[in-house]
Image (tube, rainbow, N blue to C red; front, top):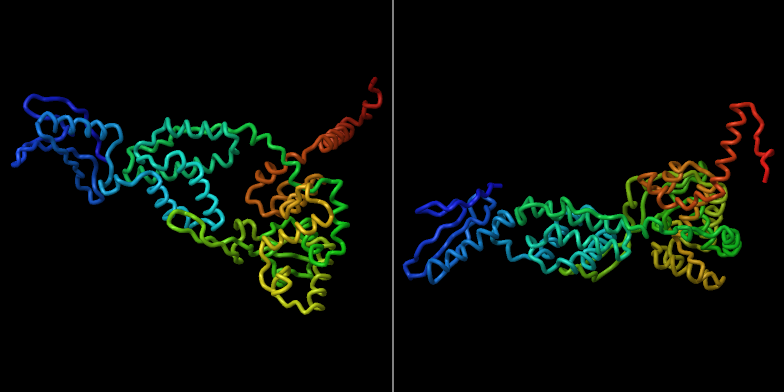
Amino acid sequence: MPQIKSIKQKAGRRGNNEGSIFQRKDGRWSGEVIVGYKTDGKPDRKTVYGKTRQEAAQQVAALTAEVFKNGYTLSSARRDLNFQSLCMEWYDLFEAPRLADATVENRRRMMKLHIFAAFGRYDVKDIDENKLQRFFNAKAKSGLSSDYIGKMKYLLNNFFRYATKKHYVGINPMIDVVTVKNDSSISKDRSGMALKPELRQAVLDMVENHKLLKPILITCTLTGLRPQEVLALTWDNIDFTNKTLSVKKAVNKKYQFDADWNVIARSAEVGKTKTPKSVRCIAMPEIVAYVLNEWLLTCKESGLKSDFVFPNTKTGKLRTYSGLRSLLERFKKRHKLQDEGISMYTLRHTFATILLEERENPKIVAELMGHTKVSTTLDLYSHVVSNAVYTVTAQTLDGVYSRITQKKNPSDSLIV
């Protein structure tokens, strides 16, 4: 981008970048200032008018000051677009095509609810570092999670990088903006995500006589599959001989949007898993293989023909997530479990919690769950490292000390 030189008044002529002023044939005075450069590299000039030379000079000076403040723009044709219009155009063109539909819908809702509410009507060049920093400070105080705020920062930074490249703004105002981690989101108690230990046996006993929910619940609890992965399972994913279960697909929501990003239609279809790491092959516990085989025989006896393991039992077609959730809600109501916070994802969380309680390697747990990073597993289930686990660790270290030193554990001689 061409550099703007400092304006220095010289006798008999105007300084560089100060614009030119001349009188038109109709008597009016006119001034021109280079405000940027077009895509072909040619100067983009803006013209102002005045009844007198002084009036035109004042307008030229104001326009020049604006160029100094905001830098060159690329094309005057885009100056009438506000931040929201430019951001929506950028997102639909560069971000949305590479994301899953559900993620696209979540990000659009985030931008409309927070970012556009704060900056939507601004001219893009009027959004500076101070405005953005105040925005993120307020969001941190509002109690939004650090992860959610981080996603907003990522989107805004990417947009302004694009806006800078296109010369809609002189510099990226997000460069020095910082976000403070929200203490409330860091210390959030996640212990309620899994089935409480005292409920685990009770729920398994309650579901024993439910032909459909029994195999679904046991499969989810003892394999850690996401509900969307369970719904997409087909019988060719189940290897009864080798007792393995392959996760290759997931049920995804599809959205249709209008020009203002309002959802006008929703549907479900079998597609890719959440991440490439989610494609995995799991060794089935004996009980999972048994209940799935039992369910297969039930399907054959009832004449239910479908490639899906857990289809809609009336049509044999794909069972929707809302249908599965309704099935669970009826079960909870029948057994008075409405206040226990049980959802389909509770079963997945219970799977991870049980393994970590049994001191399974977190890396193995992450692989079984299809997490891309082990840090995700450790962050979600840090609450499992309870005092009981610490006690076991201390006992382990006592044993190691005794073996190394060949000395008896001195704890028996402690005076209490």
